[in-house]
Image (cartoon, rainbow, N blue to C red):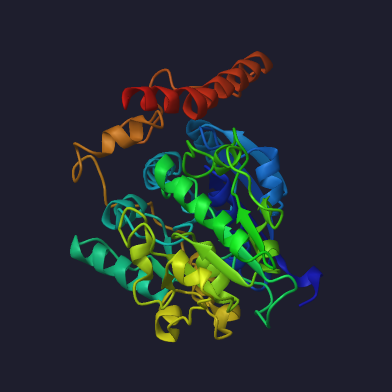
Length: 437
């Protein structure tokens, strides 16, 4: 369709970390109606995981505007701005708070945006809790057929409307299919900030990776890291691998790498992880993929999600040359789309959004499952964390709820945020470790 004939849809994304910004922004592009172009405005929720400029650049998603806001500031902006679609790329509590706040600021409006939310990757813990906190959005995206079935079952099981559940796929899949070994043969371990979380287990994994490099000097062995020391991701990383490796003497064929996962996968012959979503990216491209069993197959690690995948293996097996063969039925249920169906995976979401935007009389008010009547002992605390009262309105004393922050407030806020991040990243872990002595 000629560009002049395309509609421009205004889309906003509110995200609270680098990975959720990546998911939200890519999702916004994937779900835009095919007969439209989009103007993308990004809002970064201020907190411990607010992404740095480097992290945003690594994600590689561009927005027409990008600003850092508190929850109350965001709600004030939504009361003024006109958007067609709003993507909430937040933790469950953040989604629930914004749903109640938006319901309040859009009271009496029928021209509100279509509200979309979902999950960044594999959902292997807090399924009911996370889902019910997301209930109330117009679309709750499920990244796979398996997730869609589970999501509907949870909503229907508590008597909540399940029509919002919409099956799609992970928005960041892509790249060329794996065609054969590279020179040199490259093994990549995708690290995770909080899995595993103990020094002992992280040191074990690092040692095994280095041992593999020594055992196979003809191979290139890469440790793919999510963030640099001092940066935050979706999860807090108290023991960065960069610090642990300083005490070791890895061989020349071992290296730490950063950057876009897709670019790293371009040269990968064997992807190894505990339970990272990178495994699904790798399987999508049909790259040999291993989910490690060395530390057990356990819910706390998240690798239990891969039971039945054909990808579970140990470092001992990998050292001896094992190459896993994924189970095709398992893969097809995970939204991986290795069969070439990825191009149409977002069609149902596009169609639903188009119908909602064209709904006669506009859209009804948001109706989250949790209300002061259904969850009086739970909901108020969630809202209060975002400076909102039980009715979704700003609490007295909420930061900057009635005006834009001035230059002095902005300077003080940046300094306070830096101190907070330092406390979370540096001081708190030391105190916790001292308590374990």
